[in-house]
Length: 108
Image 1 (cartoon, one colour):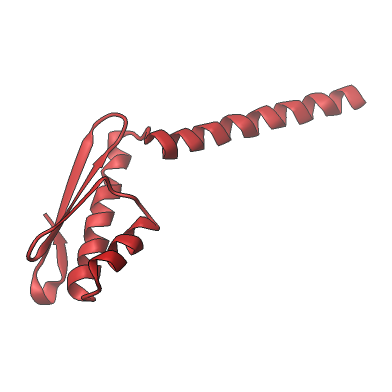
Image 2 (cartoon, one colour):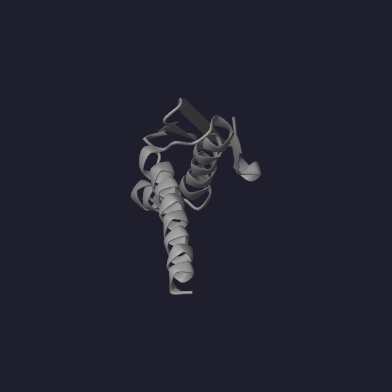
């Protein structure tokens, strides 16, 4: 009976360890499929643009705000746009959000 319990405990531990390593590698090494990796720069560009041009917060505050959800590799601010670049293990992605007055920020 104890031997069976130890086997179940060991298998549960191995499953937990495997899932933990997978999640860690996704975040640490950015091993993301392209369809999922496109979401991150789009989100960062849209939220960062809204923070900068709609809320009119400082660039430092907006970078910190976006970083709590996603850490872009590059953050380029123009007169009325924000461009964000992100590199995953497989490829590079860029997203640009333009400010359009009363419409707010729209992704390009």
